[in-house]
Image 1 (cartoon, rainbow, N blue to C red):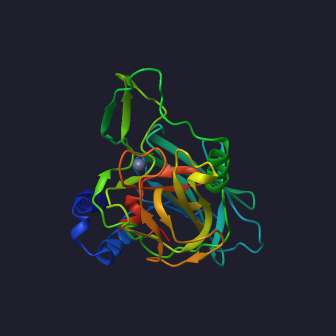
Image 2 (cartoon, helix red, strand yellow):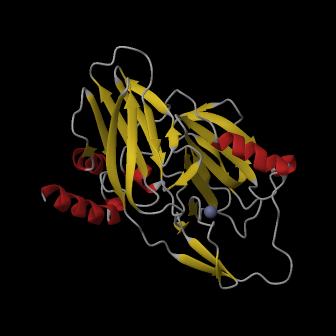
Image 3 (tube, rainbow, N blue to C red):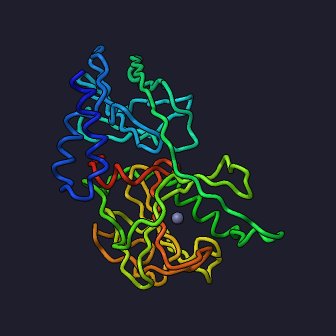
Length: 304
Ligand SMILES: [Zn+2]
């Protein structure tokens, strides 16, 4: 009961977060939002947050006190294995993304190690996403992406670098107001687009305003209109490690090159309107193991 009240309070807190220091919120989240599995044979599994909603990233942390070899545990959901990384000796973690396209409800997460198996049940809450109605006239469906940009972006989103570069909450990448939030769904000519959701956050920053790295990482993608980035426009991708990547679209200037290591807050480029964009804005997409997740929990709580 106490935990439920705290969770409810956290929901309210999330609405007022812009005005509260992240440090306070981080400590609150860290102390309350976790599901603990019963301890079975020295294999303990914690999932946070304890009440995830669509768009959240689930962090599955595994403690194995009597684990004496180097084999990583296996983490599986819906028949799919997720990459597991070592956080500390005998402590491991997998990140499981959720998106508006997932089915909410009760899910089982399996953790298997040394022939021991632990199943943790987690309930993923549904969530209402705003909708937009788009009218397309004539036969023109707008700009089509080129094979080059699709391939390079696909390869970038598939990165699963073992090293973890980020620490603590992510920074806001641009000072402009948020013009479109994560997860917005669309109707095209009155028909619901089942596979579409806004895979990031848009900031209505002025043309030429600074874009900074929200967290540390390695620049793993730089693409330009002249290289065929017709829809994405001038693009920068940062690999934060362990399956977490950020992509920044429609840039004017690009201030980094592939292979550069960036620190949080470092200038990576400026806002533009290149590619399929109707006005200057920054689109920031945050991907976990290939799926676009809500950046909000990454901004306001610490997923470490
Ligand atoms: Zn966008």
